[in-house]
Length: 120
Length: 115
Image 1 (spheres, each protein chain N blue to C red):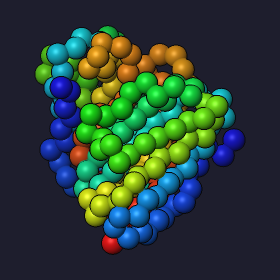
Image 2 (cartoon, rainbow over the protein chains, first blue to last red):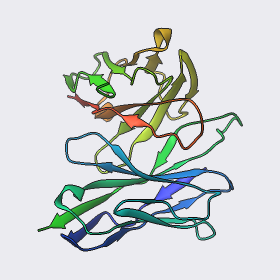
Image 3 (cartoon, chains in turn blue, green):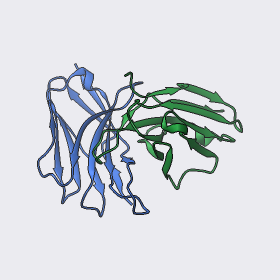
Image 4 (tube, rainbow over the protein chains, first blue to last red):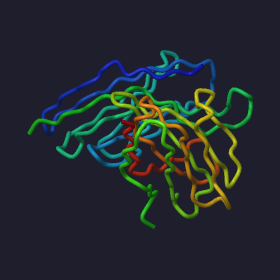
């Protein structure tokens, strides 16, 4: 079964600085998708960035970028020029293209999250 | 479009009672998911619909849980004979059909407290 591990329960960064959140996963599949979701306090979860496993190029969305190391099964999120609004819980998630029964599945498998604090 | 909505936002019930939650997905999305999130954990998949068909259900899901999506629009999640361990945030998400990289849009969740 696929698993997602986030080993940093909490992180802190100064405003305008850069921070990297770690994520590792375990899978025997070669084709899959990885996501970072942000969950602000008392607000709904939103997608930050996604990566397709067959693409070697790391995804980038404005101040957010990933370091995808497929062989190492590592998928870290870098936030540049951190802003106060970046403070939130960040979840790494994996999506397999196949279910246990061999059919298509769309479920996301989440890590336990990293709580990011941004200091002014 | 206002996004995914869930009702109620909060529910307090006594052990043994039945509860029902509702999710209204983004109108053009034919895929709908339910997740459960407990304190300090990431969301855990419960079940998935494509239109009105329930295509996947977590093996961890107790028989006390049932979900429906009549006519492929809104969905309901019912928990029968609630237990204290059912206390959690129940999240609904929706997505369009297509590739696996499609974003799942999440609702604000229903927080259930079982006394």
